[in-house]
Length: 116
Length: 392
Image 1 (cartoon, each protein chain N blue to C red):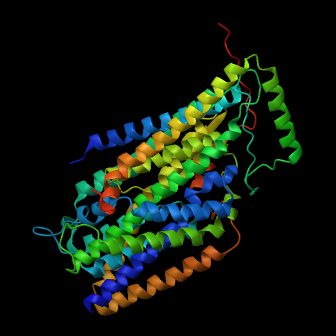
Image 2: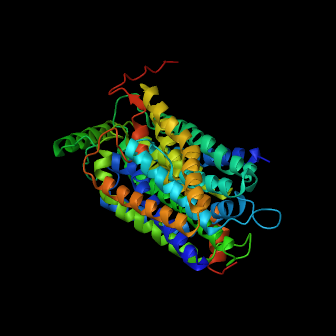
């Protein structure tokens, strides 16, 4: 007996959770950029696989981001709203992950800790 | 041979297998965050070890599949002996070594199942294997899970790029995905612990059941969970030194947004599969995600030769390790001498693996991270031209 339903459940669950987490985070990044705080995160360490980013390039990227932020047609209030929205998105993304983990292992962990 | 001695031997060998599993898979779980520079290699390795340890405690579904599902035990079934499990483990380890030597991508998990199935067939004939469980919990997930992960990663990459795309050419802030990768790769390590550490727990539980030290169909014992968790975490940590040079040979094209999408898809697929007891290969799922997310970027196409080679390695693993396991089981049937021969061969192979993995040169032919290998199955143009937005 093959449980085809199980495969469907795995696909749908994994698909939905990934889409929610990735969209929420991407939207957060988008809103963060809109609010004028474009994240510039350089690689933590340069292994062979990473194209080296020089300090000059980082400064240039920061300048470009600052320029884009200055030119933004949005009012300060709109920018603030975008910033709040961005963090709301990040929180939604994090909650989705935590909720997913809880759904999968919550019962088991509670049993392990002797709480249920 | 003394029953307790062989039980101790099997448990030791199983724990060693668990250790090599962690050792081998650190590179796979942490390949993408290191490749994009989201995490320092040292931090990534430490994080992977801790989260593997935690993950091992979170579920026992997969362990139950292995200890209670694949081989028919109890009334009406067979009573597998510790000698046969020993032979199965030897089969798995030998096949793992062979694939390393040949530079073929393989899966430790499937080698383990293959070895066990081969040994059981030699011991009791094909009736010993519950093929419907093997099909529904091992073989079908082996094919469908990487596909699932690949499809999801493809969609997620498209989404991440579409949502952050700026048509006006202003900075898009995609660097920010590096922060997200810290969490998504942690989730992959956690998922790895929930699925891979379980496999050894299943083997040890099966051994204890076969030796009559534990009733058929009972839960995994706590000391088994603890030792397996420690073995896989230790292996993960020790495997870290190899990571940097492995990454030099692959995954050069991964971007943060893509890495994040791939990792999230991998973690979601593994966690969901663990929950229904699918014993899948985390390596293959991660590889599927990397290929899928690569195809989700503009200007990408599959290098079919590389993809084909990877596919063949995967297909071969189960039958080939079954053959080696069967051979080891035949030898073990000779009695004490047979088990001794198996043990000697096993030790030689283990030493061989160690010597081989210490070799410093890493070329595309002996690359040790399958995920990095599959990264090369997708070719991505350096700077694809942006599409013009249609004005409405």
